[in-house]
Amino acid sequence: MTDPSALQVENLHLDLGGRRVLTGVELSVDRGELVGLIGPNGAGKTTLMRAVLGLLRPVDGRILVGGRAAKAGRTGIGYVPQRHEFAWDFPISVEGTVMTGRTGGLRLGRRPGEEDWRAVADALDRVRMSELRTRPVGELSGGQRQRVLVARALAGQPSVLLLDEPFTGLDMPTVELLTDLFVSLAREGHAVLMTTHDIAGALHSCDRLALLNRWVVASGCPDELRDDEVWMRAFGVSQTNPLLKIVKAA
Amino acid sequence: MSIVEFFTDLFNPDLAFLAKALAIAVMASIVCGVIGCYVVLRGMAFIGDAVAHAVFPGLAVAFVISGNLIVGGTVAGVVTAILVAAFSQNRRLKEDSIIGIFFVAAFALGIVIISQAPGYAGSLQQFLFGSITGIPDSDLIIVALMGLVVLGIAFGLHKEFVAVTLDREMARALGLKVFWLDLTLYVLVTLAVVISVQTIGNILVLALLITPAATARLLSDRLGVMMTLAPVIGAVGAFLGLYISWTWDTPTGGTIVLVLTAIFLFAWLFAPRHGVVARRRRGGPASAREADSADTEITHTPSPVGPARETI
Image (cartoon, rainbow over all chains, first blue to last red; front, side, top):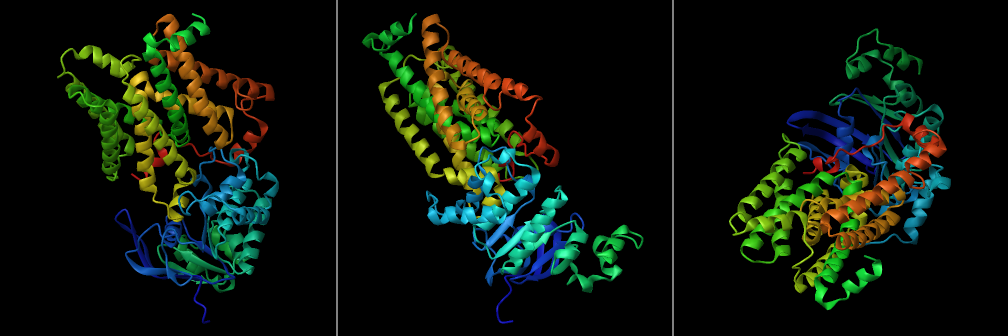
């Protein structure tokens, strides 16, 4: 393919608080792909996402987003952080929140224009939150909050979408709605990278998985990851762990 | 004293200081009301307190060398804010400890400096608790200009302040200079404090910053409404406080604070949606919808210095 990957991580080494957290990470996500980033706690999943956002400086290696080095403030990446990162007690409406994903980083003093409001309306439409657009975010349920964060990321009309544990604490119908949304966003040409602990769900809906534990232990489409060995290595679990049954069953 | 007599006194040329005090108190509460909204929403009341105390050595130096109090206070407050920001880069100590060290140190320095001035006890009391007499005409203009500058900067950076408060990580990812925005906000808090210190005093000024904004938060779920209500509440509190203190000869700063606290308690009880009475009427301590979201969600509760800890 002549087109460079939307997101390309090459030989990434990264330290956090004096400790090596990521070693030689290789990962790419193409447009049209939904890639699941899977690994135990402390494997470096969120760290990898923060590096892609340009918030952490690698010791070695490089990260290319749309062919250009990752840097904070670069448009083209939509980020959905874990839900507790957001100040839900802030007095702001749903549409106001989604607008911050668009105008937050723009020039000082710039006010939202017609085009911005259209992007916000489209984003809310995608996550089916249009009816609640004037509601204060503090009054939303967990699932609605997650959808607002996704809409905020979409409002910037990114080509790469990073989702950090979007399903944690959500009920089945919401997980299904969001999964369908992420799959269709990928089909429309977004490059979607998602961390998750829902391994069965990821095996089912992702085009490819990357098993991360400080480095990418294994990656490939779900069918290529049937070997118990790689899961045992990635998660550091024994042969009798129920995780392996989930992998087999999916 | 009736309100009519109060107005008569306000326009009495022999009591010109009263009108000046009212003008300054109202201007200060408007500025503090707006800036206080950021302080309340970010949960940085402790930083407001710190800055208020840190202003003191600057006032003391200005007093001893007969310089301008506003300039002195501004310099000291800004220097302390920068020191806190710089020292907090050391990750071993949390920011609230750094603040605890520097604001008490600044206050101690102020006391040592002001004790060098002859007959300092009286002026000390004036600094700590405020005074409505002896405000020079020039201060009216300085307070008005500084107030406009503070409000202008807040208006210009409003979008950025909101983004940083909502989600620091996202703000960084969008390319905002979070550290500089924090520092700017500290400086704005400092300036709001400095222009309020004269009438209301060094210790009580925190109430002007926090109480109207907290009251407004109880009354509205919309930031725009909250930022309009807070300065109005502050200004009403300043007017009523001055009126009561003039009538019954009570200390002005303390009276203004008590009036604002009474307004806050009233809102806490009777606010249309979030007041105690309204909640009781809906049944239970929280509305059904709030309970619904609470069981699936760990609500974000900023620690007293929460948002700033990471940056600095």
